[in-house]
Image (cartoon, rainbow, N blue to C red; front, side, top):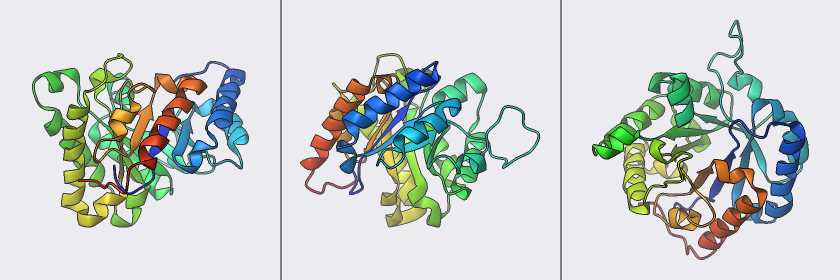
Length: 265
């Protein structure tokens, strides 16, 4: 944990299928979680097509809106893409480099870095994802892989944009598998991220919040946010249940209410 406010970001992925279901989910989170958003920063990231409807529901609340992806060019002949510049008119947040984008759509470290640079330039807050594949984990290369991915992000991040950056560590082998990383592994890997931040930005590195993502639910979220250097979580499947998500918010708020000013390592 750092001195910053905790953050829970809900990545709805390719869900829900209808506008009505998306609206119901957003209302459910707002009804159950608005009170807790005074203690925990909350971001909902629905699919592009539901951004407007969810934005209308969240208007005037403390719950913020994010997108799940963006393109690095502001405009042009790029069929099917949505630019960071376009998103800036609708939301305050965007996710880049999620492991599913890397694995299903071939996104490289360079591509993710270009998306990050464009999003920062568009004044968006960015949740940039890093994480190792199962083969890296099994062969003991988690730290090496995450350090490389982190360096690619930091190479396009200027000091004055640092507060816009959030880095989410999501071990790929834990995404949607029901198998979450042991807190000890999450701690050691996120410590690598913090070290890379310090090497580049010195004491200003504390401005970047670090999240854990990977089969997080109400039953285990406290175990992650209690870790040094962990400032919240990026939630996938469990965020599609408003009751479960509100329980996670309550658990994180409880951890931070007794934190006593604990800082990052």
